[in-house]
Length: 341
Image (cartoon, rainbow, N blue to C red):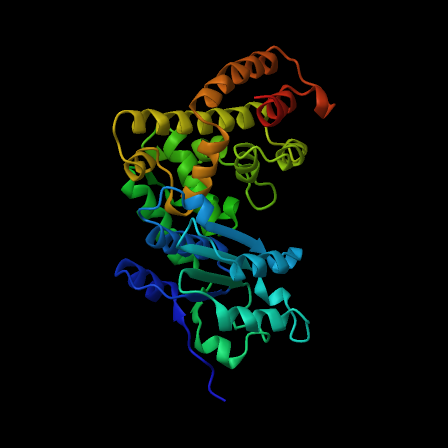
């Protein structure tokens, strides 16, 4: 039997650029960072002029037993939002004999034209629970892991666009620290862009700003904190326990506050939302999340965070550090940002 040859992310990006969108997508493979980029591009194309974009998109992790919630969302109607999107991560968690497969069949039969369904799987082939008829309505895209040379070219090109350069040894270190994950590479480049005063990124600069992302991910903590998710406290404990310096974590919190404040300043000056996001250096794939952050921390609230950061900075530099997490100034800061402001 001849193996099916699926289109790649390059084909998908070209069509999105031309305004060609499909009602149902299946994004396959292990390259999670590239998948997220393409998902963001699809959402940007769908909701280019929709101010309430966050209310039009829902994400569900099927491996966490969220299929029922996803199905309810897909089969529901909305009188307020004519265009919506549903993202179902890891649909291969549904097995062929799962009784919920009948619901999946109903979804494909009744899905509305106003709804876009995006499914993902880490496998390189469609899951068995997607029947031939379902696949006929689905655009399947293959996401292969990048070769080292492709990753190297991507990093060099991304930095060059920002007016930055990197030597060979530091480039290899960046790849090592991020575990070859495109999403983490983008986050690291974003950090270097906003934090480094040097035009050439050397090993010392990289190690000072980018910690090992293969095991502990400070970006996950920042993301949770700035949407006021109580999960941030657990993530804070994890990254502190892993050896991440307290002042480094505090600096990351400060940088995110400054980015949100910069966004509000840009819109106040008359820039459009898209112009403001570009001005702040927010990647396309992170714009949905950034929108949520600006809602969780409006301008009045974000300005209240800066004095809290200054207090934590003083306490940490004054030696007020305890092995007891509850007494750590970062814990106090995180708790106040989530529960008190």
